[in-house]
Length: 231
Image (cartoon, rainbow, N blue to C red; front, side, top):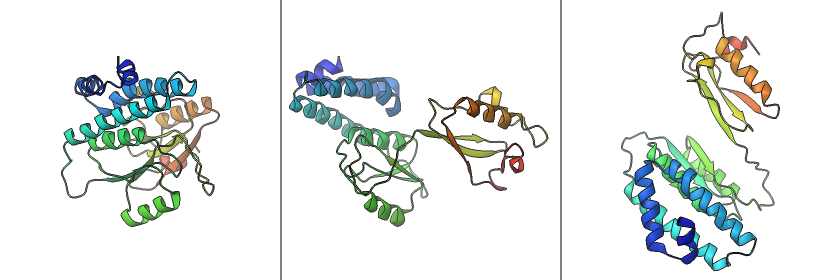
């Protein structure tokens, strides 16, 4: 139904549907995955093949953007003096702001202090923002990359962690992600004498031949992969 409302420019019904889904689903991330993304993907495809006029695509984006702005006012600000800070932006030449707004709302729901630096931000200016604010996270929404000085490449990734002191690592360029709560990875039931959880994860990585992984901050605080015993 949302697709039809957006095509007709019916902002009132689109707003009611989006806000109602957000209340029913209980999170912005689910709203994005189950409603906003699939519908806006159809809108973009309609524009690409000429089934939608440009004004219709712009109007649809404005309607959805307005709803997300309203959601922002409904999400209570997290309290605390040392909230983790995240900076978000789109790179120079990328004017698409809906995914950026969804990222902001998702992080705010998780207790982050988020500064949305907006679309069309040159990467050198983003670098200065990082130096100024020293955030815990930087997130970028990228649908177009036209900065001639940029060497940025966006790759899907996730952090795989064990809470038993084995270690943390980032894994990139896979079709999905793994979870330490999977019994196959023996979180809290492995040891330096039997690092069976690490071994199982390394075997899983072998199945993703184009993946890239990195050891994160090895040491005594978060773990050193049992002194890299399997590496």
